[in-house]
Amino acid sequence: MSLNSNNPFLNNKTFSTAVSRKDDTRQSTIIDYNQDMTVSGTVNKSIILFLLLTASAMVIWWMAFNGLNPMAPAIGGAIVGLVLVVIAAFKPQYSGYLAPGYALFEGLFIGGISAIFEAMYPGIVIQAVGATFVTFMVCLVLYKYKIVKVTEQFKSVVVAATLAIATYYLISWLFSLFTSFVPVHYGNSMTSIGISVFVIVIAALNLFLDFDRIEKGAEQKMPKFMEWYGAMGLMITLVWLYIEFLRLLSKLNSKD
Picture 1: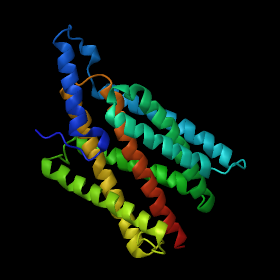
Picture 2: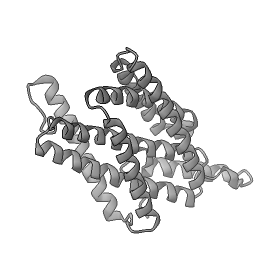
Picture 3: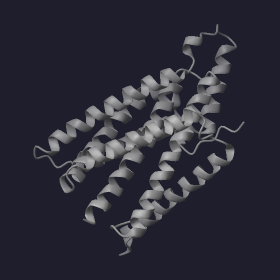
Picture 4: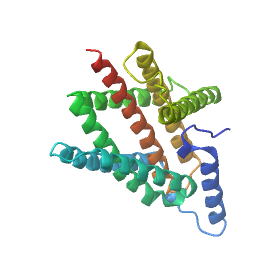
């Protein structure tokens, strides 16, 4: 069975390595099933990360609406969060420390960006939060009741689409830095709005892959630290989904 996921946190190599390390340990120790990864444990850790991210975001939100420029903490949080993601990708055994750190620093980014959008389009943040929550719950129900099945073909399509989006964003960003090129997804044209809708759909489909990888990890009794790792991967997808909803809603609001 292939264990691929397009989420860099929930990929085959990392989870295979985790299983290998655990197998090596169990050859010389008594098996303690309390040290196995579980779905409930991952859910609990996801809630913890969400609360940390929300608390951090609320601090920056409050400071922004009391005169602080939120751009600096937003950029700083994004950079540190990315660094922690890269470290965790190579050292998942430290996820118990890296995941909470990621949530706190990513909260600075989310809080700062949210404050900027809210100042431009009052009410947009609660709309984006609501849309993200509803999308998450719908995907969870569809996955839980096997209405949407994560097959190998499904994974391949989502992976290919996600890589295409990442490549497009990177190339567009580089061109906009060094030329007068204006990426087609900028602005509020119908094409730009269509691209945002497409990206949101792909981000939502990533949730199914995340759910599947976490469930498979629990079935294979991976090490306990993989709960933090899985929760961190899920949080990355949710942050991406939220940002894309903010962008889409800003385009729709700017057309009024």
